[in-house]
Length: 130
Length: 252
Image (cartoon, rainbow over all chains, first blue to last red; front, side):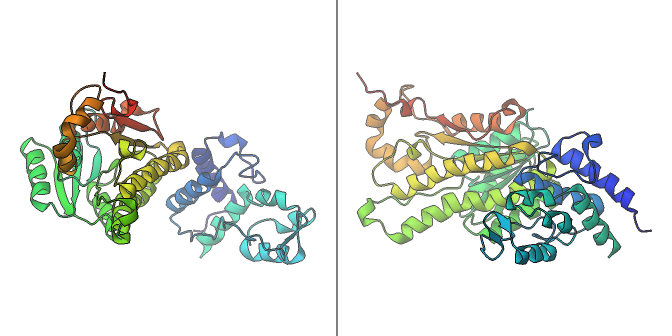
């Protein structure tokens, strides 16, 4: 039986609540991991470990939370804005993130906002469907 | 018993400080893996001592400078005993010589064993401890990291780096209950310090306010503290255990 999005979200929320030490009620689909839930770099690693164990999936390094997506490449970031090529790169690297919304105001400093609970939920759901 | 049923790995566990740490941990109820490189008989004697007291221990031959061997050792014991709660990076060597004449091979050997060995065991253990949300890593450093001696540039550099590594690891892992500290022993009565003690023992003793060399047990007691719940709010520290040597008091 495939898990519904609600079921996956519920379990992702519980995982995040446990990992980030926040109340489950604070966690919404649109919550950003860093801005809203206070995640730091080491927390991303913990979240990956916990999702792997909780859902029985394998999350290859750099697949869910890629490190340094643009690597300072001027083709992707110019004057603090993510370029069209950068947006395309994001679509490749973060297929479960809401790139369309980001593209409307593509400030580089907003990049962290792509990592939302919805992104994780969509990712996990696709993994479970495989 | 302060370490009841904890699983501990102690590198360089056959002799000197490592041996005392193994025995002290076992006396507090820990299961101990005694890691040795060359001292097979000594390591097996430590295991026999622990077993005779009703404790649980085994010995394994590993060159700590070999990352794959270290990872395999940690994986094996985690599989066998279910977890790893405590790691003591104690394996260390000296290859002294004046800096200008220092053979690059001696520089490499000391860095690879002392610092590399610490990294090689820390990495797999830290991941296990991070996943299990708790653990203790104790790196055996030396007062020589700060109060340096002539002829030990390689050793001193390795110990200074271990102190920095201890702090760097501590800030990354503390949020998941993994606490990492170092102990900086002064002059301890071990095989490693024997040559120096024989040559300059009386002079050095005058520089030690407690007026005696340390015993391996003096270090082991501090290691038990750092491995136990008693140190639950201590991380990223280098605890100097040297009878006051590093205070630098002149004799008068």
